Image 1 (tube, helix red, strand yellow):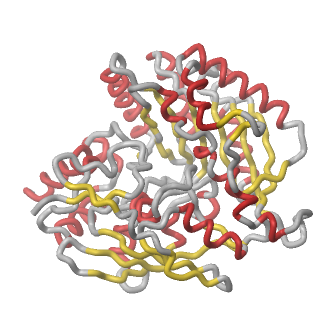
Image 2: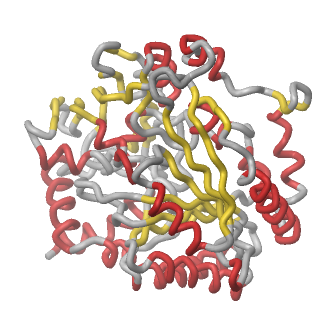
Image 3: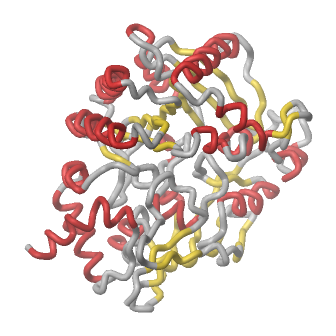
Length: 437
């Protein structure tokens, strides 16, 4: 009768794996890759295998995970529970699109093997269900064949958000990855200015270096020092001094100027790990925000309203004095999962610094931004969210979507044993009202 909240490596930015007053179930011990077929690229893994464990298993054989997050440390169960996306979402979809089947343990003790064919309803609800319907114990998924351990990466500076969006639309048919960095301090004609990184896989025969060498784990290893001298683990101490409005305005401006030069250079070769796992480049980077940490506000907005919604979010943030210190822009495609956050449009991840003094006002500011986003048909992502309310959830999901999820929750977990703080904050009040009616 005690509630359980599943927890992997705790990489969510909010309360997706917290369980105040109950138990957190640490799944990291389920860490075996059960099998990998180098002919088909199919990997069969226990739920606690991390993205790092997966790519280090498959890459030496010439394969790479279809979808990875900006850090290599989440477990596959956590990735599946959140239905994570990568910089290639517009091309390959979410991690759920790469899954063939999984084993899920229900609160009754029943263990089910689920695929799209055997139980399409549970398959599409458990992926993206944050462990609220059952606990993943095994996941079988496909990976991508690659012909080098390198990508070809180009950088392009863009003067504003419209220019960045136009580039994405033109390039998405031929690029394997697209991601935009946004300088949120830009105003007027420079609003949304930034830098795009456009990457593609190398074709057979394109790699000039020894292919086996580039596919090796040693080649992919992220360096521990900058220029072989300064430990990256200490960089956050330097960044801490810039974690204020003047400092971040300076950092963002310098990055944009450097991007202008990058755009004039030819493409560079970059390892898969170096391109994919930017968040792992600076260990403990989150500490640079100080004791209050950060929240990441990430709205997903349909293509027809995205430009106006994000422009208004930036305008309103300037007006209220809460300019995001980091903005990351991505293109998405729709997916078939029940509790999806994808709208088939765009996402903008915005990092806000939290202090004891600004916390209440910042939460109020995010509520105001949510009104802008909802008016534009947008949604939010529980892996990043810390601020949305039941009222926001009720408006961002169609009533039939919530009905289907709540019916599954009541049927598969009738005693309400699978619980997280995010569920309590954003969905449980709606579920209680649904149950009463």
